[in-house]
Length: 255
Image (cartoon, rainbow, N blue to C red; front, side, top):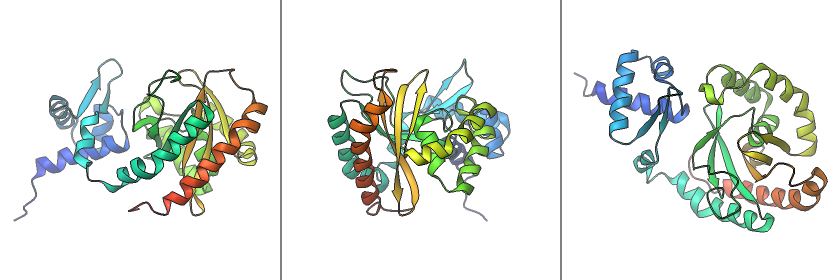
C-alpha cells in the first residue's frame, strides 16, 4: 500500500506550477498539472484562504504571495542572494544613482530576485522580489535571450510565445524585432529597452562559467539618459558589477 497522500501531492503540483508560471489562470494550472479544472479551482481557493496565493479576478490570474517564501526559509540560494549578491546590487545602485535589479530565469520568464526599486525616493516603480518579467518586453529579458546558447534561446522563445501566462506572453512582432536586434545586443554587450510601465532600462549579462546566469539592469525615466552617456558613465560600472556576480556564482550552493 502506498503511503502517499494524493491530496497533498495535488496541492504541491499546483504550487510547483505556480512557481514556474506565476500569474497563470485556473484553466492554465489545470493543463499544467493534469488535474481537472474543478480540482484546480478548489486547491487555488484553499491556498488563497490560507494566504499563499491571491487572485486577480479581472485578469483571471493566480499569483503567489510572499507567504510562500516561508515554506523555503532554509533554502540556501536565498542566503546566497542576500549575503553575497545583494551587497553588489546595492553598491552599484549607490554608484550609478538609479534603481538596479538582478534578474534570473525560471520557467520561460525572468524573476526579479533582487531590486532597489522599492527603496528610496528615486524608485521608478515598485517591483517586489520574485516578480515575474517578460522575456521579450524587458531589457533584462532581451539581454538574457541574446547571450543564451542558441538552443536555450529558441526553447525560451517558444515557451514565452505559448506556455507563459498571458500577461507575460510574447508576440510574433516582438520575436521579429528581437531577432533583428540580437546581433547588435551581443556586439554592444547590453540591451536598452523602453517599457510602458517600467520606464527605460539597460541590462547586462552575468555568467556562471561560460553560460549566462542572469542579468543586472539599471532603471531610469524615459529620455533621462542618452546612449552616449550610458556607455561612457554607467556601462563600465555595470560590467564590473556583473563580473563580481559571476565570481560569486562559483560560491553559490546547489544547481
